[in-house]
Length: 458
Ligand SMILES: [Zn+2]
Image (cartoon, rainbow, N blue to C red; front, side, top):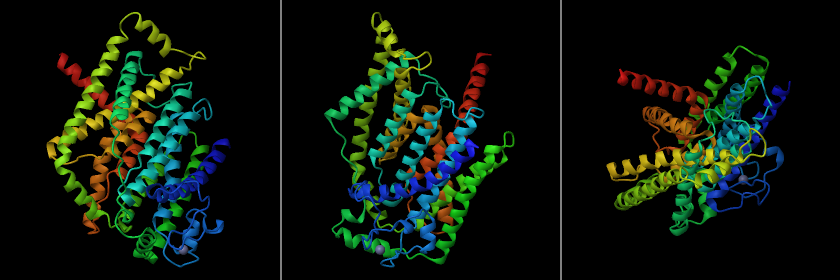
């Protein structure tokens, strides 16, 4: 009963969070406050939207995608993000619930909180990336803070594939973090700017209107959004059903399959959203070509410094009397099983290793291709995911995202509706795949490596 009530609550919460994320996606890149004004307003006529026109998904369908006041089209983005909010929430809930079958409320609520917060951040980042080719770093800091907080307060190690990191590796993580903080303080990174119409000479009001009226909602869109609403409702219904079924995993499998397919389709549907940034992006990459190699060389030095100080920290904590002091700090505990410092170090280790690995991939490929290979925003995202989910799953998600992105691009090319889609949304889908099956994948690779090791020993 408790499980079913919680599921329905989470489904509704997912829709509301999706609605809120739409506000975040619209306001953050424009430098507007997220909390003021409290109520949403129509981007074209700027009239405040009444509560009955602000019900997630349902209002968009009822109004057939047009503003009640000015009649101009409301972007397809709104119902897409809202239904994705429900689907993502249900898939994460399924993943966490099935991990801890049997003890629904025993000590693992920080896991649920951390995972949901992370994937809500990823949803906002994906929508922003699709719309503006822009990753707001502040959202990745929020996810990092969530990871640090949840790991520090979680008394039990229920996190998937994430035991407390050992004391020497904790020292490594702290060492790397200190280097990054000092370097960031000495040479702050230039802020990434969203490439929107506002950055051109046009007045914001005029640009917003032009953008809105570019995308006339067609009957097909209303049908599609209605279908999404049905799928979102079905996802909640399947999850409620799964609460009562102890053994049969089929409904849950159905949910994950349906959910992932819907999210995949939603990313593709975003190729209908109008954007004028494509050429600007191509031009920006071309302009930065000469600087990219020099930048990558500089970044490789930073990475080297991190690894050197990290390894130095490991060496240091093996020496007396530092060793004893470090261990007592690392093992500090207010209760028998709960080690807040170790938890914090575990999240930090995930952040450093996941981010560092992908940063290395970026540097190597930039030097190889002689143009920027992987955006810095993507590295921030992967690092934040590492802090919450652990480095294994974050890196697994990174590699799972590539085939998914390839498949999506093939579909778009085949449909001759080609628009450069950014990598961020595919990355988020990769992390969801990793959350569901990454543990199996990591075990499989470990077993494979173990087998190889045995083979070499013979
Ligand atoms: Zn309006």
